[in-house]
Amino acid sequence: MPLINMPDFAGAILEEFSARSTVRVDTPVIQPAEPFLDMAGEDLRRRIFMTENERGESLCLRPEFTIPVCLRHIETATGTPKRYAYLGEVFRQRRDGANEFYQAGIEDLGDAGIAAADARAIGDAYSILARLLPSRKLTVTLGDQAVFEAVVKALGLPAGWQKRLIQAFGNADQIEQLLKRLGSPNPVEGLNPMVSDLLASGDDAALVAHIDETMQATGYSTNASRSPVEIARRLKEKQELAQTRLDGAALILLREFLSLELPLPDASSALAGFADAAGLKLGAAISRFDERVAALANAGPDLAGITYRAAFGRPLDYYTGLVFEVAVKDHPAVLAGGGRFDRLLTLLGAESRIPAVGFSLWLDRIEAEGKRS
Image (cartoon, rainbow, N blue to C red; front, side, top):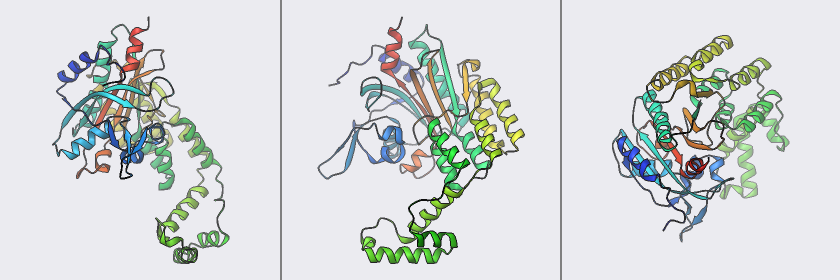
């Protein structure tokens, strides 16, 4: 039996889902923890309620629905395109509000029309909230991880740095720390002098041999989860990251990009202007961005009420492109949020790539907003 009451407007949400040709699904409250620990991101990982079964396998209370819905889709070998809807309880530690609360949402799997599917997700979230809160002025904040990735790659950073920056997308403090390190690189500390010399020499075979000898001598090799070759590769990557320095002009460009914040109708020209002035080739990413803006023109929300923020992301590692949130104007509570997660189903075990986009509604926040005078 639920520990909290289902909001009165839950029926209206289900009506909206039905009108959008979705299939309602439910997933077990007890979930395998590994997919969330591997793919959900640090912010969610530290909020999960963990437990174990009698075999010592890690389990958790369902912290969100996207991963469970995708796992169910894979397990049932259902074809695509498919639109799933859900409404149920999730469990995670929160700074504000109860640790058990209701979420509802739609996961749109397999639609190859990326721009149209993105626009539909934003439009559906906006329209449902407009029905539930008819007297409130809604605002949408939109970001695009794919554009950020294109900028980072165009700057020519090593792959390791690209990965770090992309993983930090949306976390302003973490991005700032990484930019400071790029501006003032520091040597790797705590390395054995012999290892440091071998890294400096570039003699990979000698480095691997030294690591192997050390592991054998200490008895570490019998319990090691990584081979000498893997350890050597990680050390080289760590050194490369520590020694990489982004020149002042490139750092200024990256900071300039991250500072972009403007109404969506002006965003395409601003991105094109930035790319031209910086001499960066962002054509493909900007073209996809433009296609989404065009599709949004017919999706419901007033484009002038949508803000594009280049630095805006959401704290889940599986997003790959569009990210967005919907709130009431001048109120900080996020009522709906979502984005695109094209890599997630493959990582979860799907045999082929399945494009995917979706959103969640926070029912307790919507209820609180409805009661506010």
